Amino acid sequence: QVQLQESGPGLVKPSQNLSLTCTVSSGSLTSGSYFWSWIRQPAGKGLEWIGRIYSSETTNYNPSLKGRVTISMNTSKNQFSLKLRSVTAADTAVYYCARGGNLAIALDVWGKGTTVTVSS
Amino acid sequence: SYVLTQPPSVSVAPGKTARITCGGNNIGSKGVHWYQHKAGQAPLLVIYHDVDRPSGIPERFSGSNSGNTATLTISRVEAGDEADYYCHVWDSSPDHGDVFGTGTKVTVL
Image (cartoon, rainbow over all chains, first blue to last red; front, side, top):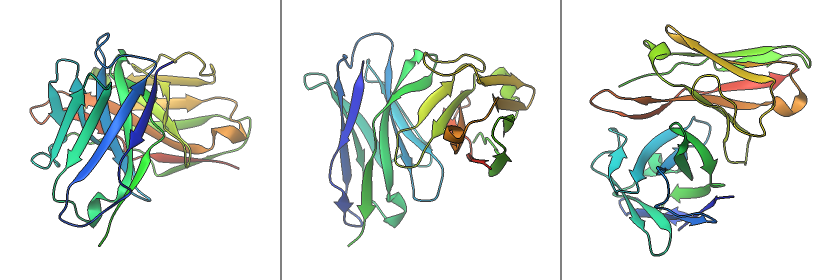
């Protein structure tokens, strides 16, 4: 059973960069036709897609975040990462990583989420 | 960009049927996925590709999709079904990407 676990700083200062890592266990980042996604949820709001990366390292990003976001993978560590530049308070949210591509493009495995607060 | 609109809330008595709609332009041409999201937990996929249920999801959960509306139906609602529900599609337009619906809070009376 594949499991995902997000990790990274819980507090980031405004204008700095947010960096999170998702570790994939009991499965390979590059097996099958999977892709790996980041999604976030600000408090009291809905889910917002951030972007995805395929095993080929092709990426797609939310147009509203394009220019600030980079998703990458480290196959030797079986991890993929999110970097969001120049954060503001609006980037405060619970960040989730998830897997897609097993059941159409549905996200069938999710991490438990990690809270990131942007504050000085 | 593509927009998916859901009613903010749906209330239903135990044992009754809850229907949650997801409106989008010609959504019937896209594959729709539905997630149940309880506070403090990871979202859970309950329906994928319009009508299919992942392993372990009760038959009480079903989906349909046609025209401009997709629907998640929860039959014989239980207290444990109380949660937020989100629809999800892939938008293949030039600014393509995953799109989530606005979310619906299901309250079991």
